Each structure stands twice: as structure tokens, then as C-alpha cells.
Amino acid sequence: MYDAWLLMQSGVSMLDARDAYLAADVMRFGGANQTELWHAFAHRGMGAGASTAGTADSDPTPSFASPNEPNATVTFTVTAADGANAPVAAKIFVGKYEARVTPVADTDLATARAATATFVPGTYDFVAQAPGYGLFRFSRTVAANQTATLNVALPTNWASARKGATASGDGTSPGNLIDDTEATQWESTTAPVAGKQVTVALGGGAHLINRVQISALLQPGQNRFSALRKFELWTCTASVANANCATGFSRVLASADDAFPGVAPRPVAPNLIMRSFTLASPVTATHVRLVVDTSQCTGGPAYAGEQDSDPTNSTDCATQSSHASEVRAAELEVYGSPGTVGQPDLQVTQVTATQIAGKSYKVTATIANSGDSNAGASQTEFRADGNLLGLVATPAIAAGSSTQVSASWTASKGTHTLLVTADKQNQVTESNETNNTATKTVSIK
Image (cartoon, rainbow, N blue to C red; front, side, top):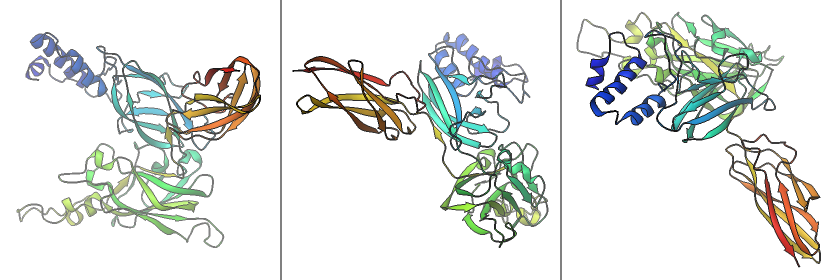
């Protein structure tokens, strides 16, 4: 480390510092640690293809590839979980952040960025973000020389402006809560913060909802203690009786006191980024209302009361800070279904032929889903010596599970080849479409 510091010029970027560490290893140890160093840098986005325009570059190019070991190649596809698996133009980020971060890949055909990225082996956190769907977090482990297609099925964010939602309420820029990104904020700057609210009319009318995502992430320059800390969620279903939700709201969620758990000495981004909150039971609603209970300033015990022994310095944030009247939140997202990551992979793992009587046999096939997503219903084809025995309805199969289906066969003496093909009519989109068949040779005496 010390050798690397000596090699750094003033005003270095993170990539300049990376190069200094690599050079120091060559000078001091003859490059004995190059593989380990490149692995560590690549896993953090400073791989062989990373670039930056300097120390103040707000849009650097990440790279997760190492030049010194075999990498994995992953192609991302993104679909609408609630929309017949239609393709979705989404950005893929590595890590836990979406705002002020450069995507590693995207599925938008209108951009120059590819849907494929290369990764040094390891486990990664990802965020998929798309208008109308909000943010979806997942993780994946990739191996050396692995080539994979990873499908991300996004649930619909019914509180998205792209899906027709509208927002109104206290403060300014309530629309920033429903724009599917943490890069913008709603704010209220008048006291008291308790009771400030934004009401969202969900897109498309009434929906059964069971989960919300909320972010209190701030922009650079905004006071850290103005971020949301504790909140309530209220819902309503519009009717003539409640005058289209002029009244009729019921509380469906009261967050913990530390829903966004800032601690001393100050709230930081990991405390404030998007968090998921599940309702005690699903509710049907046309409107969702976010109600503020406390900000970090007014609700954080680490910032309350006297924090030191100086009688001339008042430290209670709620009563002494000029920012005690401010509260901000970045995003409110509303969901009624989960998203999934990965794709099913149907395989025929076993074929048996059982004599029923005389020349009558039952051919049974075990159809397994070895993928990491559930497979819908499909059709399994049975053939004997090329002749069709039947196309058999096959039920949906959960990831990691299997089922058995059968067809009748009138067999003659001799040696025969049985051929079974799962998902013959291509009803299921799979991670591997080339491993759906199995053959078995049987001898009938």
C-alpha cells in the first residue's frame, strides 16, 4: 500500500490508484499478486475495461472483468411479470444503488449499451430499473467460463407515472415520488414534518397490493437529517360514497421507528436507499397515501437531546436545527406481485416403458424443471421409432421440481427407440432450449 501511495500523482482517480497498486506489486514482488489484485478490483467495477474522465466524472464506465483469469459472460433479458412476459427496456446496475450510478448493461434497443456484461467469478448484487416497474434488487453468483442468459421478470409498479399514476399533496414535486428512480426527491420544508403526506392515485384503477418500496435517498447538497425516517401508509378504494377518496382512507402499515435507520454521527446513503415493506395482509386500493411521522432530525434518538457537555451548544435536532422543518423522500412504489430472476429449464430426466397387458405399454417420462424460475403449463411429445404416440398436457412445474406424464404405446417385438420432447410447442421460454429431449432404447420380446 505504501509503495502504491508513492507512485500516485496528485489528484488521482480511483483507476489511477488501481494502476499504482498494480505497479507497486510488479516493482516490489515481481507481479506475484496480479491475479488477486485484479480480481479484487474487477469485483468492484474497476476491471480491465473501466474508464473515467477524471476525478469528477459523474458517469464513469464500469468493468467487472479481470485480464488474469477466466470470466463469466451474462446476457440480461428483462420482461414484464404482469404483462405476458413482454420485453422491458431496463437498466442493470451492479451493487445496491441506482441513482448517480452507471449501468453495466441495459435492454433498451435504442441505446448503444449492450445487454451483455462480463464478470470475474463471484457473487454480485444487482438492481434492475425500468419506467413503469421501479427498482428490483437481486443477487447472482457467476463462475469462471460461464455463459448464461439471466431473465429478470419485473412486477408492475402501480404507483408509477408511466403506468398512469398521479401524485398530489403537501410540499413540492410530489411527482418525483412516482418516477421510478431514486435520483429525484419530493420535499416539504414547512413545520411540522409530522402529518405531511402525498396521495397517489394508482394507474389503471383498483389493484390488490401487498408490498411497497420507499426510498429516502437524498441528492448531494440536501441536508442529511431531512430524510424520511418513520412513516405510515394509508389506502382507499374510490367510490361515490367517499367522493373518489376525498375520505375513506384506512391505515394499512405503520413503519418501525427506525424504518430508515440513521445513526450517529449522521444518516448515510446505506441507511436511506430503497427498502421494501410488506403489508400485514393484501388490500385492494385505488389510492395510496404516504404519511410522514418523523424525519431523521425529529425522530432519530442519536440526534435528540443534549449530545455533549457544552452548555453553550444546543444539540437537540428537533428544537434547535434550522432544518427541523424539512422532510424528503425519493420514491414510493406499490406492488401486488413479486418479480422473479432466472428462467425455467425443462428436461426429460427419465423414460420408462411398462407393460400393461399383451402388446399394450405405458411410456412414462419424468419432466424436471432444473431452472431457477417456475415453468408454466406445456405439452410433452412422445414418439416410438419416429411415430407419434401423443402430445400430452403437462402441468406447471415449480423451479427444482418435477412431474410425470405418460402416453400409451402398442408395441411389437424387436428393438425400439422412444423419443420424448418436453415443451414441444415452445410454450415456455427457457434458459436452455436445446436440452428438452431424451431417448431410450427398449427391447420387446
